[in-house]
Image (cartoon, rainbow, N blue to C red):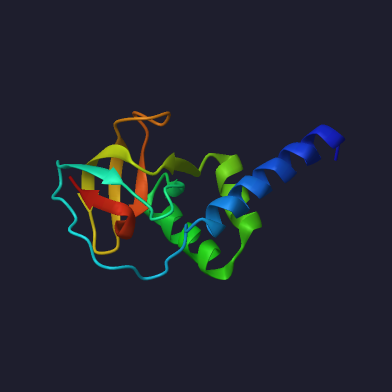
Length: 127
């Protein structure tokens, strides 16, 4: 493995570890009202950091397993493969699909505007 590739992997690993430490976990929080499908919401995390989203429902289930296990390499691999991405807390989104513990949303503001993915319902707050 060349030095440049190793350096990039280390930077991504540090970024992912920081996300996990800032609250990207499935730790239970107070229930919030989740808006209906078609409603505009904000993606929020108590630390005002970043929220991890997965491209598909199945990938979100995989990401949950990695987060619960503390598997930062698994999360890093998902981000590197483009299967997961980070969204800044406070970003506005449109609810596309609502499930019991997850929502599919399309980001409407910030650097990820236009991207869609699945996020834990605990981070979705009705406006």
